[in-house]
Amino acid sequence: MKELQELLYKYLNEKLTGLTISGPRDRKRPSKISVRPVQIKEELRFQASIYQEKKVFHKNYSQKEAVAEVMEWMEEYRQLALSSQIGQANVLVSKKGKITIKEKAGSFCVKETDLSHNRKKNYILDPEKQVGFLVDLGVQTQEGKIVRTRYDKFRQINRFLEFIEDILPQLPKDREVTILDFGCGKSYLTFAMYHYLKELKGYQVHIIGLDLKEDVIAECSRLAQKYEYERLDFYVGDIAAYEGLEEVDMVVTLHACDTATDYALDKAINWNAKVILSVPCCQHELNGQMKNELLAPVFQYGLIRERMAALFTDALRAQILESKGYQVQILEFIDMEHTPKNILIRAVKKGKEKESKGYRDVMEFLQVSPALAVLQDGKEEKQNA
Image 1 (spheres, rainbow, N blue to C red):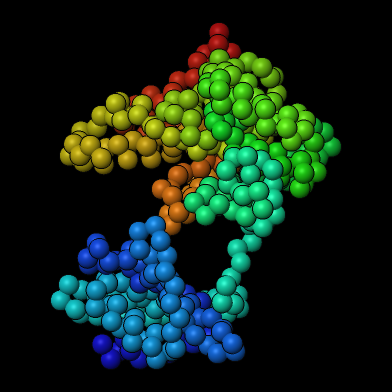
Image 2: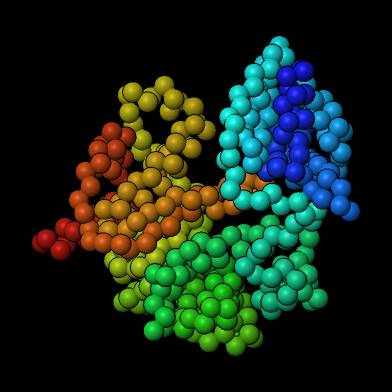
């Protein structure tokens, strides 16, 4: 343990950018512990964030105290990773207590370490400024404060707006931008998208929210009228049957269940939408189709099969979009610290369609016919008839 102690004294200073302890041997222990330097009353301290289930507890230590605590924690955890302006190190602890340290010297961090005690997250929506729809949707109080139990929803909204901020150069500013939100639900993100693009960024937008629940659509329409959000419309309708528009600039589909996502993506491709943002949900289609002699031994485990099916579904969707001239990214929508992670497919139209044999080889390998492939192939057959 002396080698570990020397490592900690070397790195626990103002140049430390982060230290994370993970892999508890006992499930009852905190899932992880992170340590960072902070400056309190002109004194350098080390703040530990201890993640216990859905709560986070903070404690501040001197260097000597921090080293002692970390040494004690590592008796119950498997891994430690740290980064600094002077280098990086990983520590692994075996079941028998053997410690392995791998260290890389050098400047791996280009940013100055933030020593502020209470760092303020730079959200796109100011958490201390009242926004009407956030109050009515129960995310903010009348005083403009975020409701403690709804902070996860506030973070989700801001994370979504960050994805939109990245694609702003793809949206025209010299005309009205048409956006269609399939399966909008209570429309937290639909209202946030309108507020961000229209009120904060000055875009002329026409946003349409579509959902099957009449009571939800009625409430969303009422709120849109209350805030005088012009050109924000909500309709009851099905994704597969919707024919209300001929051209759309951006298609959003969040948590559309199973093949509803495929119908939304199919519509977006047919409209030649410039941007697609999709968070799939409840993907069962490929799970019932997949057959492969080589993978049969791992397919026998239901949970593994289910997760593999979901991942293959999204990967094939991304490949089909690529073949239609889109540049596709698979991104994590929500930080694991707050809610179960979701995959977000972000596609930006960049060029012409291109034939891609690769994803069809995967389909043949797994003996599957994803809905999006079937829909697009049907369109091509009609055009060639």
